Image (cartoon, rainbow, N blue to C red; front, side, top):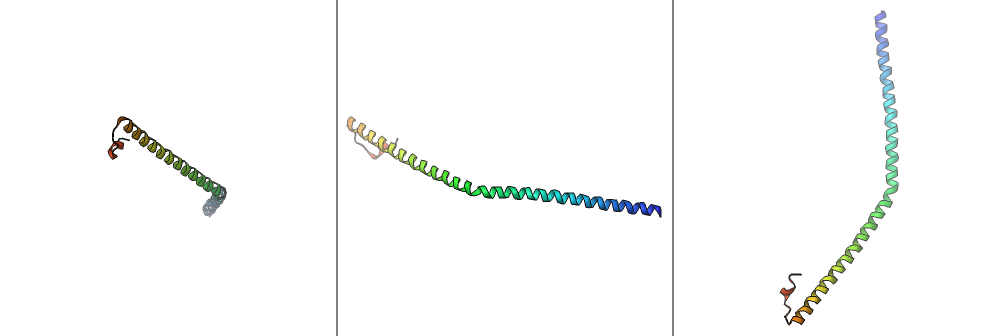
Amino acid sequence: MHDRGRACGRRQGVRSGAGEGKALATAGTAKETEEIATQINTIAQHQPKHVTRCGEVSASIGEVSEVATAIAARGRKQAAATQGNRCQREGLSQSPLSNSFL
């Protein structure tokens, strides 16, 4: 009978140990869940600012692209004018193929 009592005590000890482990795991999970929720809230609060800034950067890139396109067009126009002036000075006719190397 005495052996049975010890066996029951061991089983009871295992059960209480498992219960304590489960309680610790649940407490750890709850803390981690709270930390994740805090991080998500922080990201959500800052997201509108980042979206706005991305839009501003995109608009700036568009403006730079427009300026670069205008400069390239002026460069092509200047090159064509220079080529035309050179042809006039040298007495050459300007053909559509004369600008093919530009």
